[in-house]
Image (cartoon, rainbow, N blue to C red; front, side, top):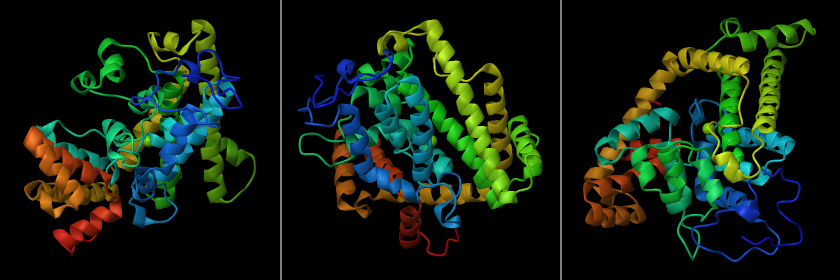
Amino acid sequence: MTVTGARDPDAGLAPCAARQAQSRGRLHAEEPHPYRGEFQRDRDRIIHCTAFRRLIYKTQVFVNHEGDLYRTRLTHSLEVAQIARTVARELGLNELLVEAICLAHDLGHTPFGHAGQDSLNRCMRDYGGFEHNLQSLRVVDELEDRYAAFRGLNLCFETREGILKHCSRRNARELGELGQRFLSGGQPGLEAQLANLADAIAYNNHDVDDGLRAGLISVDELCSVELFRQEYEQICRNGRISPRATVNETVRAMINRIVSDLLDTTRANLAAAAPDSIDAVRMADAPLVAFSAATHEQHLALKNFLRQSLYRHERVLAMTQRADQVVSSLFNLFFDDPAVMPEEHARRARQWAQEQGDAGRARAVADYVAGMTDRYALSAYRRLVDDTIDF
Ligand code: MG
């Protein structure tokens, strides 16, 4: 791609960063913009797309209507982008690209968080399955309908590479160049590696905050986790502040500690491997953006605690069951009679059924259901299946 505009979009970047000048480009060639670089355009397209706006009404852990203070997919995505941009700026990586990846990383999520994804995956078992990560790519590659010249957002290869965090070998074979690393090994660019870890840092820490706020986990229980206890005790030693501020200061200190470790470790990895381009990064044996072994352990311990105590809490599991009921009922209803869906989806179901049989019809239904927000899915369920459900 040629560099355009008044400023060089690659100015100030480390040699191993994703550079516009070395981008593998877009699927459909486009004229350069007079003053916006290509990764900036990607970021802007993501912010303006329909799926991005829907993230505000999609569950992260807590269903949207349980309270106004909990994270949604949208605020989660913003927190991921904030953490990743901080690190990118420090390391001389491409801040615009990493922001684009972070803002897009959850676009393919179903309503009701992982419960919805598991449910839809079961519905799609005989038709190729459903995977939210692959669906995020599908949203930006095919489902967004905004441009005259192409379907999807026509994002750069590097942005799509970052969105596709993992992928089965079977699906990778159908993705051409983008799926190659899942077949032959290799890493994505540093910005993609960074977005991946920023995601984990963000949810580990904000789920502590949300879980405490909801009263599903307690400070005492959290003190069994080394990372939390060390920071919590330090904050308490610093003087008396309100319980709310103590928790906020603890979460803040945990993020700061883990991000600082990520920076130090990644700097050391980059100094040792000395990759001189994004292609050298791609050929490395392991990701170069990483935690130290000790911090990795602590991060995993917190993650395991949250899995046991929060994600499997009876109140969260009760939501999981209702989510499964809503998602699977809607899927079955639309699969049996696609005409119940809005015309655009019904038309796609008819067309894909002609081309690919049941699997095509199921995919059209899965796209429609996956795109729903929590409240849209609930209101559809109440209208079409059972208006007495208590969610
Ligand atoms: Mg995420």
